Image (cartoon, rainbow, N blue to C red; front, side, top):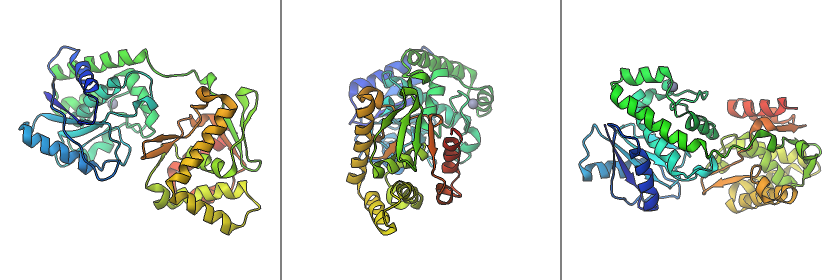
Length: 367
Ligand SMILES: [Zn+2]
């Protein structure tokens, strides 16, 4: 089995070599070939999948890579859906791995999870060559298997830690023709990479993180585990923070203007925090904020400033809004630590949205 690594020429070549070397460190039959870097040009900062697959397709042709070998593009460029990796449905041995931003999830050198994800992508294809049937293969609830879906992206740490393949997935790969020689080698590589990552996981014991209680009627943010310290966030930014807390996986750039629920939740939160303001003023303010990235950056800055004033920059970083390039905004604080009180009107706004409803139920039930 041959897996070609195709680096984006925008990547640091030493890092690319390191990723390749990590995959080669474990002796065995899977052959990892490093190809020359290629330019990756995209219309927007965040790539469309088709643009990445087009790069793969051209390179496969130019390099005359046979159709039974894998070609994986490595790129720091984010993609529009914020995925870790993906394979082309029409040319399923072509895929990409997003090599950037792993430091949001763990503190080890990022070549390790990137190398892991390259092999993971190939194993996923071996688990189910028909990409349209992948949903049935992926574990929606993480069990520490390479085929964990990780809809909540921070869950990826679980499978990186275990470096394991569950029995059902091993059987599936065998059924689809992956021989034990390769399987055995793949498992050793995963274990080797996982072992190196284990020493570096940025796990902070949960005790270090305070729970966060937001009272919408009072407009207050309290940290009960830090002697009830209060974080002073202005109403418009607090409403923005609550909106992001509800979107556990973050909010993609397009959604600010296109998803009515984003605007609806922000408005609902702002309304509770500013009961004296007229409905017209509230709506105009939220519309302006949804339309302007600059405004959203200001809200992100205000939340950061408030937490830093209360906790100092180092501890505050667990609580603030993170911006992944221009693609996605998210708060990585575990939601079981968050309680939101007195926001009863939200139920009507998110009715029918299963993802938000479940996040909301969790945050309410903490009360
Ligand atoms: Zn599995």
